[in-house]
Image (cartoon, rainbow, N blue to C red; front, side):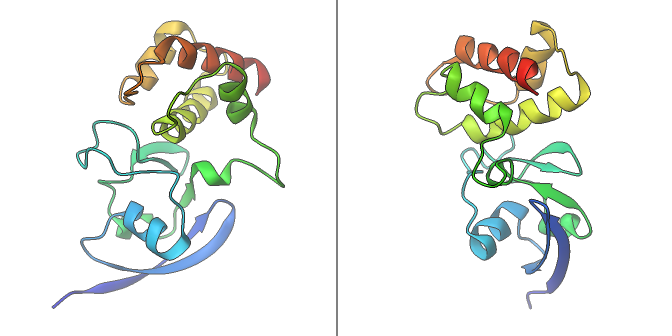
Amino acid sequence: MTHQRTLSFTLNGRPVTATARTHETILEVLQRDFGLFGARESCGQGLCGCCTLLVNGTAVSGCLYLAAFADGAELVTVEGLARGGTQHPIQCAFVEKSGFQCGFCTPGMILMTKELLGRHPRPTDEQIRHYLSGNLCRCATYPDIIESVRRAAELV
């Protein structure tokens, strides 16, 4: 018997509800019920950062975060950063400084940068590396990503 639970949470600034089975991750619910595919499952173990989401302002691995834990929480996905068709300054910085190549890791890098800048508005390179250490880039554009985060700190 599969148990289901109705969840209510804020998603990208608007209240929503969803039904989730007890074993489902928030990533599965976001993709199935809301068509949000910016966060992607890659490793399925919370090691690569491709599935990064912000829950109450803290970055989490969406592939491991059970949907039930999102009940009552505030979730932000990369799709929720842009407002009224205007990119968020962090997104602009990644475009300006070419902080991506294939783009697969970019949503996670951007959301981790948002958490970083929320806690450290003028981060050192060491802080940037520490915060992004759980986000892997298969294309190895790390120097451009660091430059993008530095630029984002200027714009935010």
